[in-house]
Image 1 (cartoon, rainbow, N blue to C red):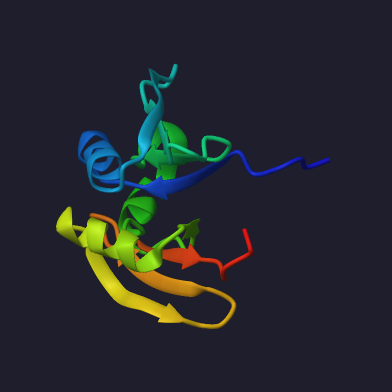
Image 2 (image 1 turned 90 degrees about the horizontal axis):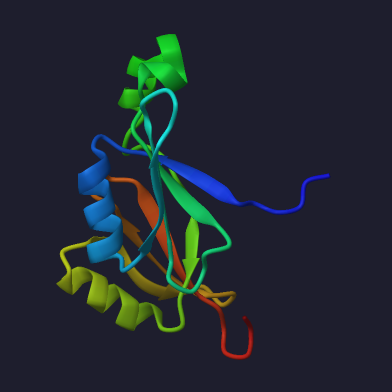
Amino acid sequence: MIERISHVTVLVRDYDEALDFYTNKLGFEKAEDSKMPSGDRWLTVSPKQGRDVQIVLQKPGKATFGDLTEEMLGRIGQGTAWAFKVDDCKKTCDELAKRGVKILSPPQDFGFAIEAMFADLYGNPYILMQPPAGRK
């Protein structure tokens, strides 16, 4: 049976620029970085306090996608609807903006959570979610 989500993938144009963004702008840590037998790179990052799920930074290539490579390259910047839990949505938005991260929507209180949205270097949108006080 399925136990849990361990990895999620975001398509990238360049491994090193993606690694730089996710580590230096978002404050994530590099979890894994190795060469696969196909010659592709296995590169993952995760939040410092959330290593149970890793984000695979994947550059579409022939070894992985074959004839679909061009189509997958066209999908860069069009994915994700992931939510990252934060303790203070406004403070996190302010810090990310100082680091040059594009904030798509400022923090808004929806009752069930305070949420904001930002984009990575390719335009992929992500949600910052602050649960109500007393909820984790």
